[in-house]
Length: 188
Picture: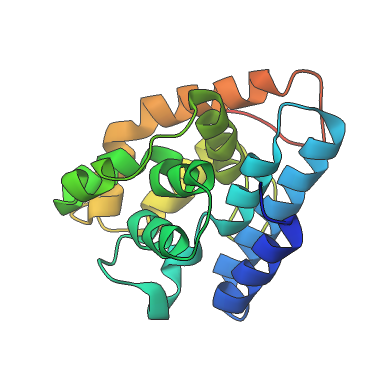
């Protein structure tokens, strides 16, 4: 049985509220996921829960490896979160590419794999929500991410390598939403 969504909201707030843009991004993404879930059956409670929890690994107290998808997923798994949510947190938004860049591919591979459709939805939501919580295009979001990290940083290298797949994944996520249009969501 899936935990109540209020628990995910509270957990995200506990670890990320007060972290500025990180909390703004997570809060907006969680609320967007909830709105889409209300407009279409495509966005399941698992996706909505993962939207709230996808960046919890950024909390300094939870950092074990410094790679937020792995740290967040490990924390959630250790605290009884469902395998489906753990998988989405672990693998969201091209995490496999960054894991390779950081030498953590084996550790990431030890976590459950998500449904491809759910992963596309999380990627769409993540890559169309700015750090400030605004709805943006995928291209705007990817450019913003690249501008924050120098070329030699693992994030920059991973996003550069994964860009075509991230764009394709976000498009598939948007298409799977069908005619649902909550807010002014746009794709690349």
